[in-house]
Image (cartoon, rainbow, N blue to C red; front, side):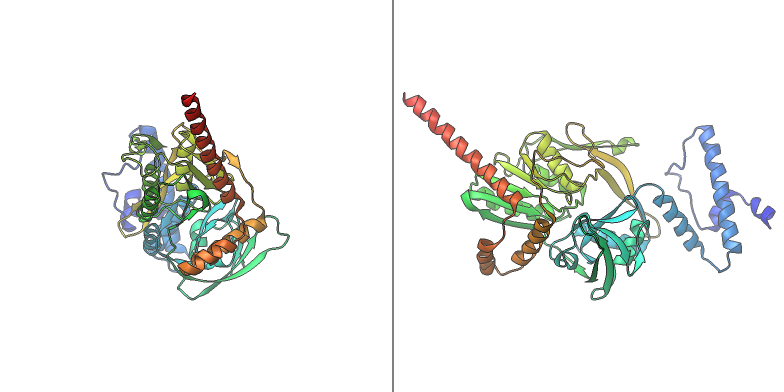
Amino acid sequence: MFKRIRLLSVAAVLVAAGLVLQTDRKLYSKEEKDVEDVEKQLRLFSDAFVLIKENYVEEITVEELIYGALNGMVDSLDPYSQFMEPDEADIVKSDTEGEFGGLGIRITTRDGYIVVVTPLPDTPAYRMGIMPGDKIVKIEGEPAGGISLRDAVKKLRGPKGTKVAISIDREGEDELLDFTVTRDIIVPEKVYSNIMDNNIGYVRLVEFTEDAPDKLKKALMEFKEKNLDGIIFDLRNNPGGLLNAAVEVSEFFIKKGQLIVYTKGRRADQNRQFHSSKDPIVGDVPLVVLINKGSASGSEIVAGCIKDISRGLIMGEKSFGKASVQSIIDLEDDSALRLTTAKYYTPSGISIHDKGIDPDIEIPLTKEQRIQIIKQQEEIYNLPEKEKQEREKEKVSDPQVDRAHDVLVARKIFLEHDADKEKQQEKQ
């Protein structure tokens, strides 16, 4: 039997599996040694494929074998690459459009653990107090250490109204924290804004989805009409999203033609530069950007650009450190690859992958402050406008927002004092 299998060619196995090698995709380089190496490895794959198909104790379909092989192949790359079966691909596409089902958390893998990048506002996870940096160590009582991001997403997502039990390891806690979360359809608000005392505008962007720039633009246009003396742009707990959305958001604050970010990959078409193509909305208004360890990807693109070109101050805590570009590539059966194809760099050439962005002014929060502020934001932003205004007066202090506000007010006072001094000198 085994000798007969060994005689099967790679092509025959691929045909049997229903695979077609498209001529417009290069499977390997043209160098002879590379060709020989690839053919050798494909023969190994073909042997294993046929052995499993014909001898495994239970009947298994070609699709199951191929999907399993693709999953294993992609899992060997990095935590962010993923093979997605058709139903998973649909979910991911709905994510980028801003609506999806689940708990309301963005997750990644670090050191073999499933880690919460951030909970999204007005979602089940947010309301229950799940925090950035929480490690999910159990799902439905089963250990979650070492499982892939794909498998974690499968376990955590489910129909609206169903429940999932998770156990979390949180820094500073001696024991695991147990949560039973009821799944829901997640449609988070993208932008929260208001005018603070001393004519300072505050705006918080939740995520870089497809429609986020339009929603932020509306808030910034209102700020522009009021001729504000400063803007606090809150990117704390913003896990990122679409690269193009991050570029468009950056354009609202910086001069036309300014380099925002560039990407570098193995292929020439992955080496791209993104410059601002529009005049800014609030290009001259003093700016403070708030970040923390829940700020990732698109948030780091914007903060990195603002910091590099000295457009504003970055305040808060070090960001998450995810600076790689994932491309979603559709496959023939509606499955897809989410593949890391490049890394991005700030205008000065800094790659912040696995490092994060250091704020210009660090303002650490205690664990208790983080939880209190998250709960408070949830309660206030879901109230009717009249009640919201009343509660705003009673809310607990947010040290990072307060410090940003004070910095902008101090700048305004200094400039006014400087202008008065110049006028007095002119009179003399």
